[in-house]
Image (cartoon, rainbow, N blue to C red):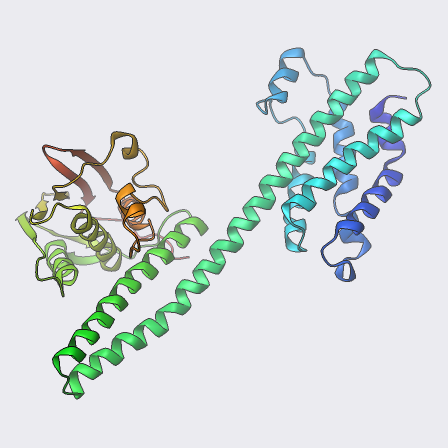
Length: 381
């Protein structure tokens, strides 16, 4: 009997063995019903059987072996993906879930071989086709499981970032009230200044974290454009970045009309991250310069600093999330999550703009942002 026929005729027996194995490795068997343990096993097996009876050329077989073949069994992929999602939901870990497929493969081959009377070349081809189908199902299940893990992590980070804003606001307001209502000596003023600065850094990090999570849970950052002056926002961002830093050397150059319609909160994030990045990586006692040139339809914003240039190999990943420079990695504790430039890029994209970076030892590092003066709003998440 060909393997595809064997699977169809004995599918219930095979699924019974799947259930017993799943029961043995389940994280909390008391909460697992029989339906949960059996899950999509029957659908996966029947879809695999149908795939095995589909004609396949030698070139298609070679491509499929490398994961490059065309999708021939959408029902197999759908069942496998659903299985991966549900196994994550009921508490299986990735090793437990993938071991189910290993057991399924061994079970089917063992039961089938034990019933064979004589070997045949076609039977070996059947085993190859069955292994391909199981590998495809395993790949889909693993991808779906990993996606659920990522989404759960992102939701947790979103909740964490949201809930951190309230205590941070309480710290900031309390220090402000101390300064207003209490006469403090020099030492106390220093401590309050440190608390204020630390709270400000933490607020920026929380904002970056929330923006990062939003970008992963949706297609782009939500924006609500409104009339504003970019030059005014830039000066406020410089003032905030330099607060408490007597050696701050950030300057602003403005030319042309800098009025437009942008999301003020998002532009503040962009400016704070660009300025903070320039101050952090700029050479000591060398000025960092923010220049804004307004045109009829767009504004060009450049952030320039001197200092150690960005390695050419790192340029392509400079805007990726959770990427930190080598100097940050070696420099001990940092207020950076490695999200700043990623957030800058996401804000630019949300405003239908562009961003580029150039860096060399002679000319320094320059980030160039081009923003249209009118941006379409995006739906909030």
